[in-house]
Length: 333
Image (tube, rainbow, N blue to C red; front, side, top):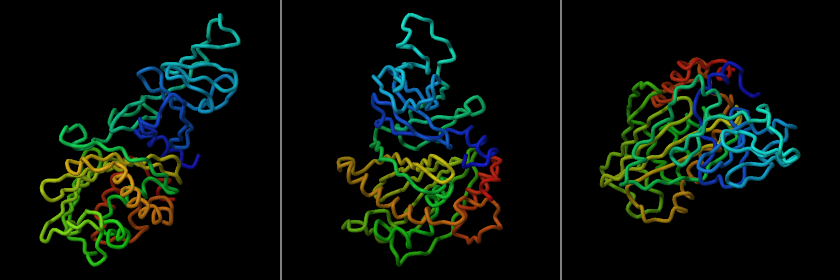
């Protein structure tokens, strides 16, 4: 295991996304969360999340076949259905099936086009990070493809909420290299983390758009951080436009993150989705290079281990919120 054992126990009580709903068809899907191999499969109208291991002879069920109702192990054809129950043993079709053959399962919740689960549900509050406007009929809902990052989820989330890097990292997508100043802003604690409203003249239109300049317009970026690894950014565009981006960083391991980015907006709803996917990928690719290069790879929660400036208020608040969860050992190593 790549996590400190105590930190793993804390993170396992939280809800994390593991896949896009649309990516799960009849074929079983193997994913990893917190170093734990999982299998996802459809059983009628429900989605099953289970350990990716057949209890008979230990073959990954993600190697098997599904039919939309069950999943069959590739080794001996044992078939599993709803709630991970073994429903068929081909070698003994008329015999009773022992309960020991049932899978160890975890809850599955579909929200924002993602499949969320929790590895220690008996100790977890039923809280998944909220996303503003997702259920508003005036908004278009968008599910961008996930992005894999060879870095720690905490570092990736910290980069998402950082407002001082725009002028140096995102100059090929939306930022202005001549506008690096970060105006003062404050953070506010919430029950699940914190939020911050950041106002500046840095726009969010893609570079090259003829109407991207709005002299005198003050852009508002409203960050809402839900610990440990989810944040939303609501951007206030001209003409009452709103764009909400969720940064849901799934900790595959302590050194690997699968980042999901559901979005919704109330403008440009007739434009091709592929344009949104492409632009989103370009922005996060710019971030990826920096996150993967950071040292230490983990996120130091001890404030004395890295230097800070006023622009880092959100980063400081994020680290403080993680400390309140009891996380410390892995992150300060």
